[in-house]
Every structure is written in C-alpha cells, then in structure tokens.
Image (cartoon, rainbow, N blue to C red; front, side, top):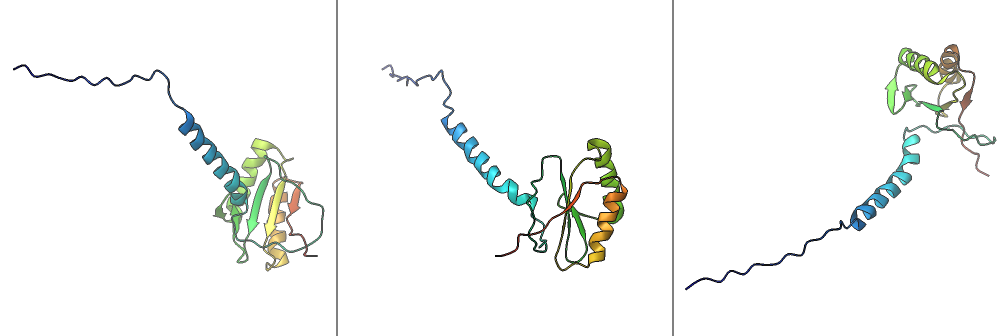
Amino acid sequence: MPSKRRSLQVPVYDQINLTNLIDTLFFLLIIFMITAPLLEYSVDVTPPEMNADPIKPDNDSKIINIKADGSIVYDSRTVTEAELQVIMSRIEQQNGRDTAIFLRGDKDLRYGTVMNVMKLIRATGFRNVNLVMQEEAK
C-alpha cells in the first residue's frame, strides 16, 4: 500500500513586516531622549544657589565637576589636575579657545579649590569659563 504524503503548503511572504522593528526603534529613541540629559549631571555635585540669567550649554561646551571632597570629574571620569591640564590642551587644539567651559563646584567646597581649577583652565588659554549655580528658592 502506498503511503500518502501530505505536503504542507507554507505561504511565502515576499514582504518583510517592519512594524515590530520600528516600534522597538521608537521605544529606544524615547529611552535615550529621557536618559541623555540625566547623564550630563550624573556627578553628585550640589552647586551653590544664586539668581542669575540661565546659560544654555551648546554641543561644543565642556562640563567639569568638582566634588565636595575636592576630586575633579571630567566626562564621568575622576582626573588629577595634571590630567585635566592635558585634556584642556587637547580640547584647545581640537576646538579652539572659544569653547565654553562650565565649572560645577559643590557648595561645600573651599573657595580656593574652585579658583585653582579655574586658574588651571584659564592657563591653557580658555577665556569663556562659566560657574554653574542653582536657582535660588523663592
């Protein structure tokens, strides 16, 4: 007796369904849009309070943080003053001296510590050094 074989016909799709891929892409885009601003100020520094006009950093500006213990953080990495000077020289060669530098110092720091870092930055040729403050509570 001959055995009957059934052949299953599987439909062939000639188009790729991109809906799931696009949904995932939009989800990741939203996640990155939410977390990117948080990563900028991920260093635990509480600047002093003062009323001043807000300054918006642009894409070329650099942010240097000084923690309460006096350690210097640049680009989420703790650096020494000598390393910071090398980094600033490299930025000056790549972007020029017009790059805006934002200095965020903790409010519990000694004044001299912040001034030493500012002096170091200015010694490499940068003139656009801004101190970051928090807005005073009203």
